[in-house]
Length: 204
Image (tube, rainbow, N blue to C red; front, side):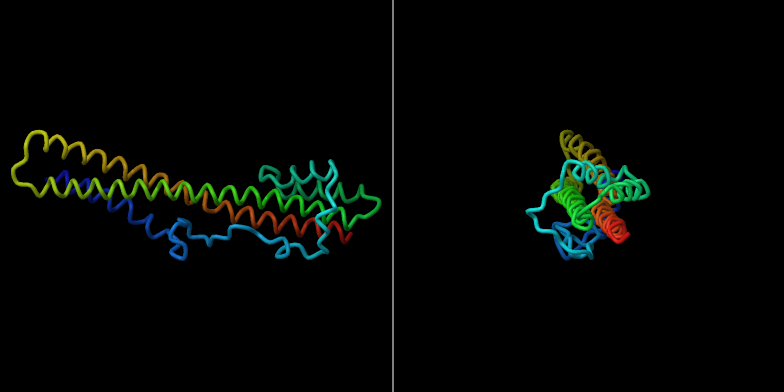
C-alpha cells in the first residue's frame, strides 16, 4: 500500500514543475518563451528592402549559409561579411541588403522548423501525461480494493513500476525541452546581430 502511494507521489512530484513551465496563452505551446511562428525582416533590417526579383549570386548564397549557422561565431561572421563588403565594387548597398535577406530567410526557415518540432514534441508529452493519468487512476482503484487476487497484486506492482518510469521519462524529456525552447530566441537574436553587422558594413 505504501509502495502504491509512493509511485503516485513520484508521478505527481515529477510532473508538477513541468506544468508550471507551460505558456497558457497557447495551450499547445509548452515553452515559457512567447511563441512567434515567423520573424519579420522589417523588425531588424533598417536599410532599404530590395525587390524579391533581385536574387543573390552564388557567392552571396555561400556566404549566407556560412554566417547563418550557429557554429560560425558572430566574430567570424563579421570578418566574413567585412571581407565580402570590401570586395564589392558596385551596387554595394543592394548586394549587402540581398545578402542579409538571404541570411534572414535561412534563419527564419530553421526557426520555423524548430518551432514545429517543439509542437510535435509537446503533443507526445501530452499523450504521455494522459497515459500516466490513466495508470494512476487504475492504481488508485486497485489500491482501494480490499480483497485483491494474486493477479491484481501483480498488476499493482507492475503499475507502480510503469508510473514511476513513465513519469521520469516525461520529466527528463521536459527538461530537454527547456533547452530546445530557447533555440527560437537564440536564432532571433542571431538574426538581429547579423542585421546590425551587415548594415554597418553597408555604411562603411
